[in-house]
Length: 239
Image 1 (tube, rainbow, N blue to C red):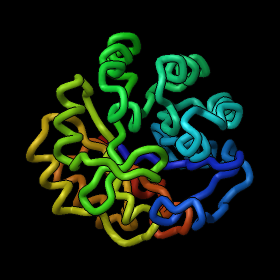
Image 2 (image 1 turned 135 degrees about the horizontal axis):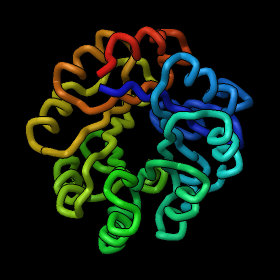
Image 3 (image 1 turned 90 degrees about the vertical axis):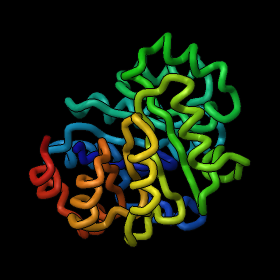
Image 4 (image 1 turned 135 degrees about the vertical axis):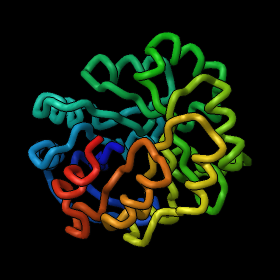
Protein backbone atom coordinates (compact mmCIF):
# COMPACT_ATOMS: atom_id res chain seq x y z
CA UNK A 1 0.00 0.00 0.00
CA UNK A 2 1.30 3.43 -0.96
CA UNK A 3 1.44 6.27 1.58
CA UNK A 4 1.07 9.53 -0.34
CA UNK A 5 1.70 12.87 1.39
CA UNK A 6 -0.56 15.73 0.34
CA UNK A 7 0.37 19.28 -0.57
CA UNK A 8 -2.60 21.61 -1.00
CA UNK A 9 -1.71 24.88 -2.69
CA UNK A 10 -3.60 28.14 -2.37
CA UNK A 11 -2.11 31.48 -3.32
CA UNK A 12 1.22 29.77 -3.90
CA UNK A 13 1.40 28.57 -0.29
CA UNK A 14 1.04 25.16 1.35
CA UNK A 15 -2.24 25.13 3.28
CA UNK A 16 -4.83 22.80 4.77
CA UNK A 17 -8.57 23.35 4.79
CA UNK A 18 -10.98 22.09 7.42
CA UNK A 19 -13.75 19.97 5.85
CA UNK A 20 -13.08 21.59 2.49
CA UNK A 21 -14.05 25.04 3.77
CA UNK A 22 -12.04 27.79 2.07
CA UNK A 23 -12.78 30.08 5.01
CA UNK A 24 -11.13 27.63 7.42
CA UNK A 25 -7.60 27.62 6.13
CA UNK A 26 -4.32 27.05 7.94
CA UNK A 27 -1.12 28.09 6.20
CA UNK A 28 1.66 25.66 7.08
CA UNK A 29 4.50 26.69 4.78
CA UNK A 30 5.15 29.56 2.42
CA UNK A 31 7.12 27.32 0.07
CA UNK A 32 5.37 24.17 -1.21
CA UNK A 33 8.66 23.26 -2.92
CA UNK A 34 10.42 22.96 0.43
CA UNK A 35 7.60 20.79 1.76
CA UNK A 36 7.84 18.53 -1.26
CA UNK A 37 11.57 17.99 -0.85
CA UNK A 38 11.05 17.29 2.86
CA UNK A 39 8.47 14.59 2.12
CA UNK A 40 10.79 13.07 -0.49
CA UNK A 41 13.66 12.96 2.03
CA UNK A 42 11.35 11.14 4.43
CA UNK A 43 10.78 8.39 1.89
CA UNK A 44 7.71 9.43 -0.09
CA UNK A 45 7.41 7.59 -3.41
CA UNK A 46 4.71 9.91 -4.78
CA UNK A 47 3.20 13.31 -3.98
CA UNK A 48 -0.48 14.28 -4.05
CA UNK A 49 -0.92 17.93 -4.99
CA UNK A 50 -4.20 19.84 -5.08
CA UNK A 51 -4.49 23.24 -6.73
CA UNK A 52 -7.21 24.66 -4.48
CA UNK A 53 -7.44 27.89 -6.46
CA UNK A 54 -7.82 25.86 -9.65
CA UNK A 55 -10.54 23.72 -8.13
CA UNK A 56 -12.48 26.85 -7.22
CA UNK A 57 -12.19 28.72 -10.54
CA UNK A 58 -12.32 25.72 -12.88
CA UNK A 59 -8.84 25.71 -14.43
CA UNK A 60 -5.30 25.26 -13.09
CA UNK A 61 -3.94 28.36 -11.34
CA UNK A 62 -0.78 27.35 -9.48
CA UNK A 63 1.14 25.63 -12.28
CA UNK A 64 4.25 27.76 -11.67
CA UNK A 65 4.36 26.48 -8.10
CA UNK A 66 3.72 22.92 -9.27
CA UNK A 67 6.56 23.28 -11.79
CA UNK A 68 8.90 24.37 -8.99
CA UNK A 69 7.97 21.24 -7.07
CA UNK A 70 8.51 19.02 -10.10
CA UNK A 71 11.95 20.49 -10.70
CA UNK A 72 12.90 19.88 -7.07
CA UNK A 73 11.90 16.23 -6.58
CA UNK A 74 12.63 12.93 -8.31
CA UNK A 75 9.39 11.14 -7.48
CA UNK A 76 6.09 11.06 -9.39
CA UNK A 77 3.48 13.74 -8.74
CA UNK A 78 -0.28 13.44 -9.07
CA UNK A 79 -2.23 16.67 -9.43
CA UNK A 80 -5.89 17.62 -9.08
CA UNK A 81 -7.84 20.85 -9.02
CA UNK A 82 -9.64 22.52 -11.91
CA UNK A 83 -8.52 20.04 -14.58
CA UNK A 84 -11.70 19.89 -16.67
CA UNK A 85 -10.63 19.94 -20.33
CA UNK A 86 -8.30 18.03 -22.65
CA UNK A 87 -6.25 21.19 -22.92
CA UNK A 88 -5.87 21.40 -19.13
CA UNK A 89 -4.90 17.72 -18.96
CA UNK A 90 -2.23 18.17 -21.61
CA UNK A 91 -0.91 21.34 -19.98
CA UNK A 92 -0.29 19.68 -16.62
CA UNK A 93 1.19 16.55 -18.19
CA UNK A 94 3.50 18.74 -20.29
CA UNK A 95 5.17 20.15 -17.16
CA UNK A 96 5.88 16.66 -15.82
CA UNK A 97 2.81 15.61 -13.80
CA UNK A 98 2.59 11.82 -14.00
CA UNK A 99 -1.03 11.40 -12.87
CA UNK A 100 -3.92 13.77 -13.47
CA UNK A 101 -6.85 13.64 -11.05
CA UNK A 102 -10.19 14.52 -12.63
CA UNK A 103 -13.39 15.04 -10.66
CA UNK A 104 -15.90 17.65 -11.82
CA UNK A 105 -15.41 16.92 -15.52
CA UNK A 106 -16.44 13.30 -15.01
CA UNK A 107 -19.82 14.47 -13.75
CA UNK A 108 -20.29 17.28 -16.27
CA UNK A 109 -18.75 15.88 -19.45
CA UNK A 110 -18.69 12.10 -19.31
CA UNK A 111 -18.06 11.74 -23.05
CA UNK A 112 -14.83 13.71 -22.74
CA UNK A 113 -13.39 11.22 -20.27
CA UNK A 114 -13.08 8.38 -22.77
CA UNK A 115 -11.05 10.72 -24.97
CA UNK A 116 -8.87 11.73 -22.02
CA UNK A 117 -8.14 8.11 -21.12
CA UNK A 118 -7.42 7.07 -24.69
CA UNK A 119 -5.20 10.11 -25.24
CA UNK A 120 -3.26 10.00 -21.99
CA UNK A 121 -3.39 6.30 -21.08
CA UNK A 122 -5.21 4.72 -18.18
CA UNK A 123 -2.21 4.95 -15.83
CA UNK A 124 -2.00 8.71 -16.26
CA UNK A 125 -5.54 9.60 -15.19
CA UNK A 126 -7.25 9.03 -11.86
CA UNK A 127 -10.86 9.79 -10.98
CA UNK A 128 -11.54 11.98 -7.98
CA UNK A 129 -14.75 11.29 -6.07
CA UNK A 130 -15.37 13.79 -3.29
CA UNK A 131 -18.25 12.98 -0.95
CA UNK A 132 -20.03 14.63 1.94
CA UNK A 133 -22.79 12.72 3.78
CA UNK A 134 -23.10 10.22 0.96
CA UNK A 135 -23.53 12.87 -1.76
CA UNK A 136 -20.90 13.57 -4.41
CA UNK A 137 -19.55 17.13 -4.61
CA UNK A 138 -18.01 19.00 -7.51
CA UNK A 139 -16.43 22.36 -8.39
CA UNK A 140 -13.98 22.56 -5.53
CA UNK A 141 -16.34 20.89 -3.05
CA UNK A 142 -18.68 23.89 -3.38
CA UNK A 143 -21.53 22.28 -5.34
CA UNK A 144 -23.66 19.26 -4.44
CA UNK A 145 -24.75 16.84 -7.15
CA UNK A 146 -27.52 14.26 -7.39
CA UNK A 147 -24.99 11.43 -7.55
CA UNK A 148 -24.48 8.97 -4.74
CA UNK A 149 -21.04 7.59 -4.02
CA UNK A 150 -21.86 4.20 -5.50
CA UNK A 151 -23.43 5.63 -8.65
CA UNK A 152 -20.32 7.76 -9.15
CA UNK A 153 -18.06 4.72 -8.70
CA UNK A 154 -20.12 2.81 -11.26
CA UNK A 155 -19.82 5.74 -13.68
CA UNK A 156 -16.05 5.84 -13.22
CA UNK A 157 -15.80 2.10 -13.78
CA UNK A 158 -17.98 2.25 -16.91
CA UNK A 159 -15.87 5.05 -18.37
CA UNK A 160 -12.74 2.94 -18.05
CA UNK A 161 -10.77 4.40 -15.16
CA UNK A 162 -8.43 2.04 -13.35
CA UNK A 163 -8.44 3.78 -9.94
CA UNK A 164 -10.04 6.61 -8.03
CA UNK A 165 -9.38 8.82 -5.03
CA UNK A 166 -12.23 8.70 -2.51
CA UNK A 167 -12.27 11.78 -0.27
CA UNK A 168 -14.67 12.07 2.64
CA UNK A 169 -14.85 15.85 2.75
CA UNK A 170 -16.62 15.93 6.12
CA UNK A 171 -13.53 14.28 7.67
CA UNK A 172 -10.85 16.03 5.65
CA UNK A 173 -8.53 18.05 7.86
CA UNK A 174 -10.34 16.99 11.04
CA UNK A 175 -7.86 14.44 12.48
CA UNK A 176 -10.79 12.15 13.33
CA UNK A 177 -10.75 8.87 11.39
CA UNK A 178 -11.60 7.58 7.91
CA UNK A 179 -15.10 6.38 7.15
CA UNK A 180 -14.21 2.71 7.51
CA UNK A 181 -17.70 1.23 6.88
CA UNK A 182 -18.02 3.10 3.58
CA UNK A 183 -14.49 2.18 2.54
CA UNK A 184 -15.11 -1.51 3.24
CA UNK A 185 -18.23 -1.28 1.09
CA UNK A 186 -16.25 0.30 -1.72
CA UNK A 187 -13.56 -2.38 -1.67
CA UNK A 188 -16.16 -5.14 -1.77
CA UNK A 189 -18.18 -3.56 -4.57
CA UNK A 190 -15.56 -2.52 -7.13
CA UNK A 191 -12.50 -3.97 -8.81
CA UNK A 192 -10.97 -0.52 -9.20
CA UNK A 193 -8.02 0.59 -7.13
CA UNK A 194 -9.16 2.76 -4.23
CA UNK A 195 -7.03 5.57 -2.79
CA UNK A 196 -8.43 6.99 0.44
CA UNK A 197 -8.26 10.56 1.75
CA UNK A 198 -9.94 12.28 4.67
CA UNK A 199 -9.57 11.76 8.41
CA UNK A 200 -6.42 9.61 8.37
CA UNK A 201 -4.68 10.64 11.59
CA UNK A 202 -2.83 7.65 13.07
CA UNK A 203 -0.78 4.60 12.17
CA UNK A 204 -3.69 2.49 13.44
CA UNK A 205 -5.90 4.04 10.78
CA UNK A 206 -3.35 3.22 8.10
CA UNK A 207 -3.05 -0.32 9.41
CA UNK A 208 -6.79 -0.83 9.19
CA UNK A 209 -6.96 0.65 5.70
CA UNK A 210 -4.18 -1.70 4.63
CA UNK A 211 -6.09 -4.68 6.01
CA UNK A 212 -9.22 -3.58 4.14
CA UNK A 213 -7.29 -3.62 0.87
CA UNK A 214 -6.98 -0.01 -0.29
CA UNK A 215 -4.35 0.74 -2.90
CA UNK A 216 -3.13 3.97 -1.35
CA UNK A 217 -3.64 6.39 1.52
CA UNK A 218 -3.32 10.15 1.23
CA UNK A 219 -2.08 11.76 4.44
CA UNK A 220 -2.38 15.50 4.93
CA UNK A 221 -2.96 17.38 8.14
CA UNK A 222 -1.70 14.51 10.31
CA UNK A 223 1.84 14.77 8.91
CA UNK A 224 1.83 18.55 9.28
CA UNK A 225 0.61 18.36 12.88
CA UNK A 226 2.99 15.52 13.79
CA UNK A 227 0.24 13.02 14.59
CA UNK A 228 1.79 10.73 11.95
CA UNK A 229 5.51 10.43 11.33
CA UNK A 230 5.65 10.11 7.55
CA UNK A 231 8.96 8.26 7.50
CA UNK A 232 7.71 5.72 10.06
CA UNK A 233 4.45 5.19 8.18
CA UNK A 234 6.17 4.66 4.84
CA UNK A 235 8.67 2.18 6.30
CA UNK A 236 5.92 0.19 8.02
CA UNK A 237 3.74 -0.17 4.94
CA UNK A 238 6.22 -0.64 2.14
CA UNK A 239 4.92 -3.07 -0.48
